[in-house]
Length: 289
Image (cartoon, rainbow, N blue to C red):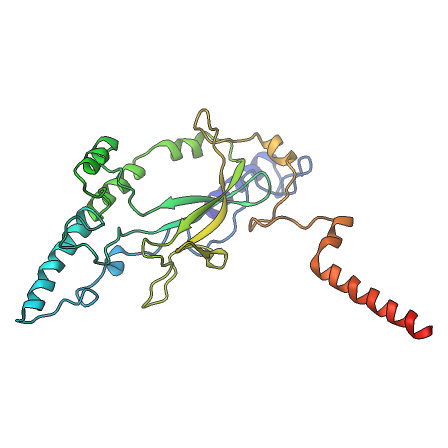
């Protein structure tokens, strides 16, 4: 993204015949593109590796042995990995009760674009399969057969391919104005086991870990994402003038800007300070009496 911005800036400078483009309106940026801030994940997404996150035979208490229990555990292990590939959930009595969840990770990715309210715009990446790989009809068929949705490794690969081949995001980025209107959303992040980092290496799988919070057994985050027109399903993009004219009520990290003027007295620190001053003044008056 930085490389693209440099090219755009160079092109603007050459067209204007100067090293610095003039200010236009109330805008102080020097590029026609919204400025980006560094993200700890980068533009290649989460470092999550399904192979590393998969339960090992040791985790499943599978070991080499000749006892009946060892044989039973080994057979259950075969069923576990079969379901891990196909369903991502227990499909028979053999695997019921085993720690079997679909592999993948959900996270927010910083797009580098800036919302009309001043906050950085994020994109929600759903890396945990949702069972839609083979369409809604197959999903309903699996339910009628009392089988779990296809959320295993194999269907997950198909879902990733379908998302990767979707031309919508690319077309929007090419023909869109580049000046988005955003909305605040709350989404689950991390894997299906309720983790946001590798327990062994400590490698973090999500961006902006400090903003994540644990609620209802899941890690969650609130981020500003592209707003969508509910009737048309298309992203809401503004003209450059409308984007510049919109009041920037939020900081780049998505937090509301502090209001100036009288309302700033609502801060708890100000209230406590005023209370202490009033107490001291009252004590002095009583002392003089």
